[in-house]
Image (cartoon, rainbow, N blue to C red; front, side, top):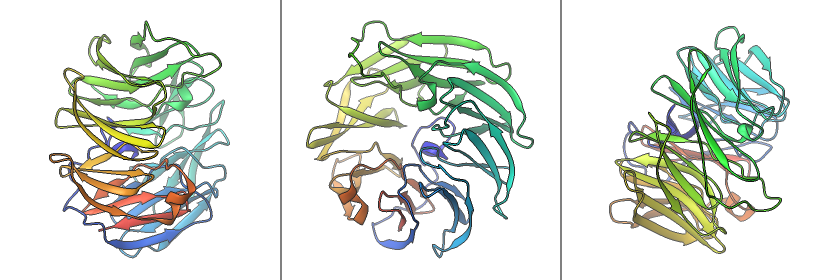
Length: 354
């Protein structure tokens, strides 16, 4: 599941033992990965830009099946009730049988699906580039409702907590965050930033929200916002240089972690979740992807390699060098399950480190 759970916390609280950075296996495909893996008991599901959805045995690293869907790229799969669900650039959301790899149903939206689906109580929630947030029955593929979230909603993967689904949207001026009732599809509240300057001809793509500590945390180019989950009011915002490029964020033990890139320097920040004050940072080389957290360790890609950093000391524990890091930035967030970290690379391979 994208960023560990329905809240997109990025925290794998049942991650098992601590990986030491030893290669367990690699699995090669015909295209690069921008989507994160979905891990089920004994099997991992990976969407590659070669147009295939892969099921891989987690012990041996061997293919169990593949399904050619086509135009897979950004959408990370989600697993529930015997199905793996993934979005496609062909505008369809696909539900695929976990065991056979056969398509159970396909739901056609009005635009490319870049977001990662979230599944709660047998309903699939996802956004499309047509600007809608959709709720679709997991078993039948029938639409329950849709909510018009705006033109840039397709870039934001929905997160779920407290009976609501949270999704970001934006334009050339501001970003917004919606809280939408899971059952009715009606708006609970909407937050819109009030004083962030616009940048001409630069779309203000919203990030995907992460939920925790009573907050929804979402980013834009040079701000990270913390919004009260109950009221929709801003609790704090953290400003960085406009040159920083953000990825997503993780929330763990009262701290919000996120990666940012400033030229040749990559920084993983840690902010106090209640105040927004910086309490931790780790600097590395070049572009950095925000971390996944397990057992007090942050795991993330940077131009220096795939790094594991102790968040209590800020010390790097190990650094794994992969072929794909020479190809540029990585879009795949790692998953940590049973003492193994799984991640996908731009070199077209999935890696498992123990």
